[in-house]
Image (tube, rainbow, N blue to C red; front, top):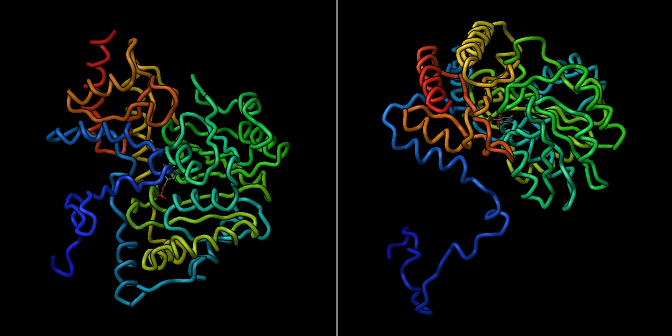
Length: 395
Ligand SMILES: Cc1ncc(COP(=O)(O)O)c(C=O)c1O
């Protein structure tokens, strides 16, 4: 064996003659994470030639030119090294101002993150002990159910069917002495539902009554087809607000987001970042300065186009599908027509070359499916027509 080649696990160990099975060493927590639902869809999809892909969780537009140029300049200027763990001061300052302005918070801590995902993980690590419970609304973003398990905490999904609204009584009923955190995601992935000021106020009241920390995931705040409402202003000492650049600017691969919240909590998250993500990508942090230092990036035309796509898909499917009209993000979550499961419906859609995701990936139930309309109008129209044909066959 050459010095650089890795040992092949199927070759019997020379010392003992037994076959070493690396999978025997996989930890329970990794085994408990279930990726099977979404993997099945992608396995089926891999067989398709040119699918109409309505499964993608990122915008179909590219990063705006001024941001790309700033990124290239940052790399060329040598901004390629570690930054301070909490992020570069030049970026923290304008973010901090914006957070204070939009929330009314007086002295928030800010942590620049490797994507909003890092903020979900770090806030759970900072705030949850083993056995602590985390509430979130079902249908939910996949990480909310899986990540608590990694740290021995308990995910608790609060059913919101059939309207996907926030029902305060159901949240109250799910609270136990072990509940520590409540996650609010508005606009929502996968339903596109945006919560009203009244719903957020009811959630804030519950958080105050039971001393819960609220994790407010606002990654889709730019994709709001009316005014974006946040729970953050209602909970100055009890909320971690997460925002990101991934979706707004089509830069999911650049890995950039930020958390704001009470300084004592943000400091703990920052300490944990030091030993995990270390820092957010340096060139992306410098590139993001473009957004605060000039007026060169205007996403309004993109957001307007997405509003029209939302209208097109909602009206295009209205005759055959039950849909709770989404107010934001780029998803709709229609009910499957007929009596079969969403997984069965999705398998049929895939046979017709349309890729959507079955509800059970985002929910305890399997009665709905997620459509992402972050595709060209042409693809969207074709997808709508095929889904309608499928529904006609089933009804
Ligand atoms: C609700 C929600 N939160 C967080 C994320 C993570 O985004 P990122 O880590 O790219 O900022 C996503 C991505 O799909 C999402 O849908």
